[in-house]
Length: 397
Ligand SMILES: *Cc1c(COP(=O)(O)O)cnc(C)c1O
Image 1 (tube, rainbow, N blue to C red):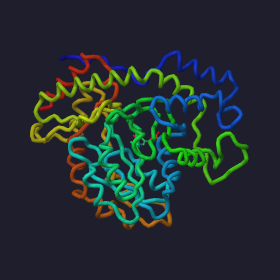
Image 2: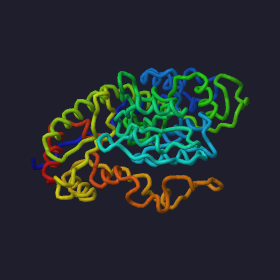
Image 3: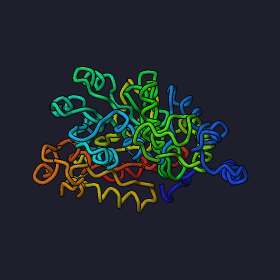
Image 4: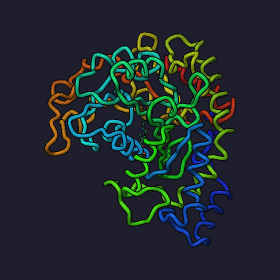
């Protein structure tokens, strides 16, 4: 194929988003913090709508996906002296929010086919200090929650699901975010439901839901006097403007989700025909994948040893929207240099200094060296765009 086809533009929006913002301005209700104004606000209605969308009892809007994890950890009582297991291949926020909560993240290598936290490697990381596991449904692909919950139950660990990529992803008939104690979402500009910034926390336990609310709204209880602060929380509230945009984006999302899955299944089928091309494995237990991105590992034995910088460059030159993959956590400077919070002992961590040297997390290192990810624009585009991408990947040989 000669010319790159048209890829869908991101973000996707129209007059509904514009009108939603104007309506907030005209209403004069520019925030949703005061209990009196809660009932009619976009913030509070969005929470109800998001809970319904996700099949969760409780949902709370918050400032962003990073804070959603931080608030969850604080609400679960995780803090000083605790360790939290996180996957190696994720955005820094999964681990930096553990640092923010005064705890120590411990890194777990990933599965070579799903690229998700490898349940078989979790138990070796558990110490008497371990309090929780944060799993990440990377690119929207659901983790093997049964295996993870079995380990968590055995060792009395809490489970936070980082669903920043996984709005609407479903595992064994139930949406992600409902398997662990808490599910966290991001609505940052690149995420599949987008308000520029924003986040949400879901859970199904009433007591925990109260703790979450306290943490994110200054220690208050919903509906009570504004100057009653029962515990030390902070202000992690979602903006009313963002909530208004989110309500319109969420209405458009189910159709996009269906298209993402249809196109990803088509790509899976076509790419299978090219030896050495390994898209992120979609296991039988996956009903729906949000496909924030579409990750592909190219076996270097079939692709003259091609490394990621060359893959990115070649495909971008062909006009294909390719995203950088996350660097493995242990290779990022804040971790290699063991920077952290003053007064916290990170010496028990399995990263930093010599522990960040190559070879300690062999699977993620190998995959990352030869992987790339197609942006969600590709998954929302037409068949001609998909065929072009497949042909150009084949031509990297
Ligand atoms: C984006 C992201 C976050 C953080 O979300 P923000 O809204 O950007 O703070 C957390 N975890 C993962 C895996 C992400 O991709």
